[in-house]
Length: 125
Ligand code: 5GP
Ligand code: ZN
Image (cartoon, rainbow, N blue to C red; front, top):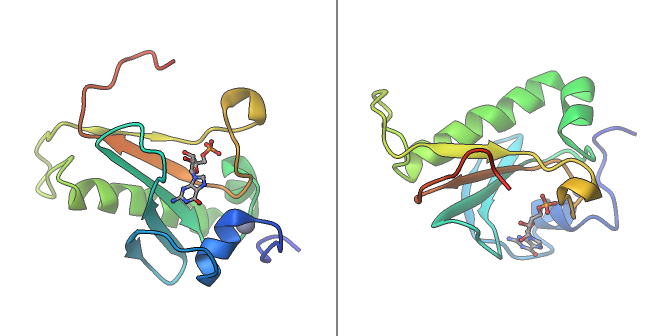
C-alpha cells in the first residue's frame, strides 16, 4: 500500500533506525540527514518517513507530505545558514529530485537533495 515501509528500501531502513545516518532534523513525518557522498559543502537529503518511489508519486499520493518535505528543505537550508530566516539572500541553495535511473536516481524512496555552500552552476549537469 502507498506509504508503507518496503523491506528492501535503504531509506525505509534509515527511517526505522536499522541503518545509521547523520540526522540533522526530524519531524513526525520527515527525516533530514547528510548524504554519505556529498556533492557540495552542504548536501542533506530530506525524505518522507512514508515510502513513495519518487517525488511525483509522493505529491500524488500524499500532497501534504510532499509539502512537509519541501518545507523541511527550507528549514535545513536556514539551519545551515544558506539563507537567512529573516529573508536575506544568503548564498542560496538548490533542491533536486532526481527521478528515474537515467536522471541519476539510485534510491527509489522519494528524497530531496538540498545542496549549497558553493557556487551552483546553471544549467546543472
Ligand atoms: P539519488 O542518486 O537516488 O538521487 O540519491 C541517492 C543519494 O543517497 C546519493 O546522493 C547517495 O550518495 C546517497 N546515499 C546512498 N546510500 C546512502 C547511505 O547509506 N547513507 C546516506 N546518508 N546516504 C546515502
Ligand atoms: Zn522506502
